[in-house]
Amino acid sequence: MSVKILYFAGLKEALGLPGETVELPAGVATVGGLRDWLVGQGRDKLATAKNLRCAVNQDMAKLDAAIQDGDEIAFFPPVTGG
Image 1 (cartoon, rainbow, N blue to C red):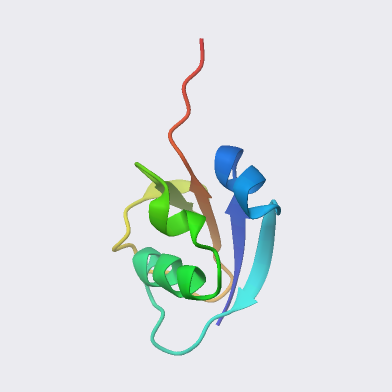
Image 2 (cartoon, rainbow, N blue to C red):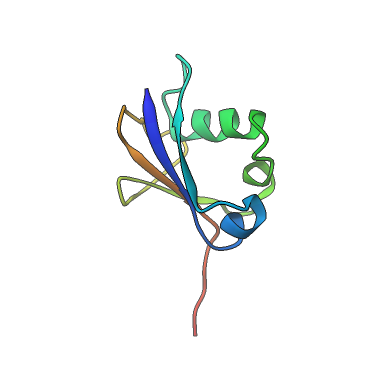
């Protein structure tokens, strides 16, 4: 399964990339599973980010949300403005 991952705000800066497309191994079927797999691939900031937010195909999602081939998953910390 191939998915596109986008990183925003502090995660983008900490990881040094705005996003990537990855081929996932069998068994990675949720946003949480994807995050855990990415941490295992060296994206440690995803494990330590406080209040991590995520979206699947531009819809807010929780870590138990299912992912499918071709999905776009975004990870971002909470953002405030003013």
